[in-house]
Image (cartoon, rainbow, N blue to C red):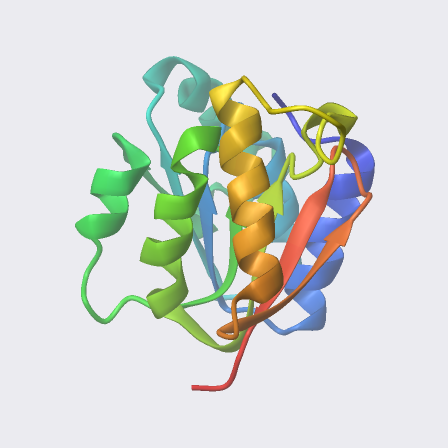
Amino acid sequence: MQIGQDQGAFLTLLTAAIGARSALEVGTFTGYSSICIARGLPPGGRLLCLDASQEWTDIARRYWARAKVDGMIELRLGPAVESLKKLEKSRQFDFAFIDAHKPEYGHYYELVLPRMKANGLILFDNMLWGGRLGGKGRLQHPNGRAIDRLNRKLARDKRVESVLLSVGDGVRLCRVAGK
């Protein structure tokens, strides 16, 4: 469930390259991806992490402290859809990384997109779903169906420019169109 080192380096590079000051992570697990995002933020930058697991995020907190990024990270526990709906109306982000419950990816996207600044980046993990997408036959697994639906939607969505990259298990990179 953790991203690989190549993806971690990619997150850090992208966060820094766009000069992100405010970032969002949906799905934190043990904190490796959030450390990578936080390392790309400038001094004073902030990362909001949303996750449902106290057990896994307790581990993340320990790693954040070790990496000395804990002061720039805010964690909110609970179901991601509900947490996103409860965000302050004015809360906006330059960068978002989504790696949580796959059947909810489409919901996360629609809740995150209005909160993104123009030219902000949204990244989705696992968008190749272990190489099982694009084959013959109907997808049976709900995760695969959800990812396939979102890939198709993002390829046509005029609100973003997107590309599917073969980094890790597939990263869908979306640049939010100017508002």
